[in-house]
Amino acid sequence: MGYTTPTPIQQQAIPPILDGSDVIACAQTGTGKTAAYLLPVLHHMLTRDLNHKFINTLIVAPTRELALQIDQQVEGLAYFAGVSSYAVYGGGDGSDFVRQKRALTEGADIIVATPGKLLSHLNLGYVKVQQLQHLILDEADKMLDMGFYDDIMRIIAHLPKNRQTLLFSATMPPKIRELTKRIMQKPAQINIAISKPAEGILQAAYLTYDRQKLPLIQSLLKDKPLKSVLVFAGKKTEVKAVAAALRKMGLKAADIQSDLAQEEREAVLRNFKNRSLQVLVATDVLSRGIDIEDIDLVINYDVPQNAEDYVHRIGRTARGENGTGVAITFINEKDQRRFNNIEQLIEKEVQKLPLPPQLGSSFEYNPNARVAAGGSRFGGNKQGGGKRKPQQGGKKGSNHGSGEGKPPRPPKNEG
Picture 1 (cartoon, rainbow, N blue to C red):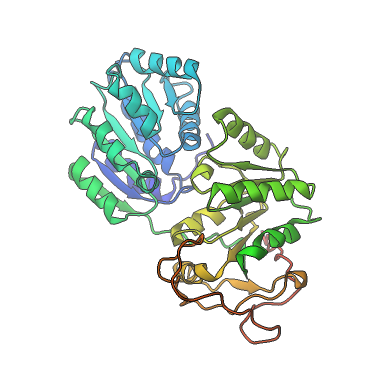
Picture 2: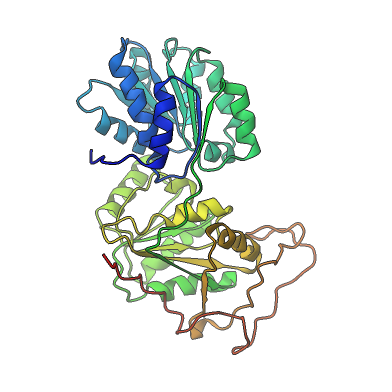
């Protein structure tokens, strides 16, 4: 499988899991956390009497894409172990439901499921969880962000109390703490410090009004020899619009968002992975199953809701052999304070580049700017405070950096 040295989360999580303790682990995606819980759980399954007629391990993940990715890792790790697994998620047809029911009634050893679909099956009374040994909640903070708190509690009501519970999360907001108090017994607590972006990622940002964002991304990608670009946008309407605009200019671009059927999403991911697509535009939630190396450029079409997500987003580049990549963020007036929080987290001031001349001027960066009362990052009812007037060219502080609005080149690998 290519494992040589355990990652920090694997070093700290595997021993208490092997000991049978409940575990709360705070670690980012991309740190090896999936193997951190799968390896010891598989060890338990292989060294104990395993009743294949019942589900031994239940892994709950926020999205179909992540559930499929975890299931693929289970298959890889357990290929020669005689351990069966099955992914249970929504978005399919009636035949999918029949196959899922068969796996849940005849007993797959490991079930990887999304909360809503799993609960639908549990409520019908045929899911064989009576001998469940392990419950794993992966990316628990995302599940709560998506409103699954009550579903998780309903799922747990169906499960035996005598089980091992493992919770993995990129952040530890109060609601996660509340959840762990209700479902866990004296858990071991592991906190892997939020990793800073890899040194090989060259970060930059543009200060831009919303109306300038689409022409800006078109300008950045026009006639550039980029093989693989990942764009994050906050809403599916934006995701669709950006992908459509890039296709119009001749780029092989596609979007992945909740309106697509499951088969279409899987096809888009395959095409992006095999380089049939140059650009993939995705929402945060729908990007959770994207695990692809050699992404040249990550563009944040808007600033992520929290600083940790920024590190996660831009970490999708610089994963290849040369360990380099570029990450660019578009900052509108309302997102300035949020971006300042990101700069504090990563302990670095990100270079602000000037807009291409044809897009006009922007505004002066104000890290303490606040959204007007009643406003939101995508508009809505705003009380007071209109748009700032654009700064005239040449004033200090309006857009730091030099050049004609070209994205920075990735640093050379020094070996």
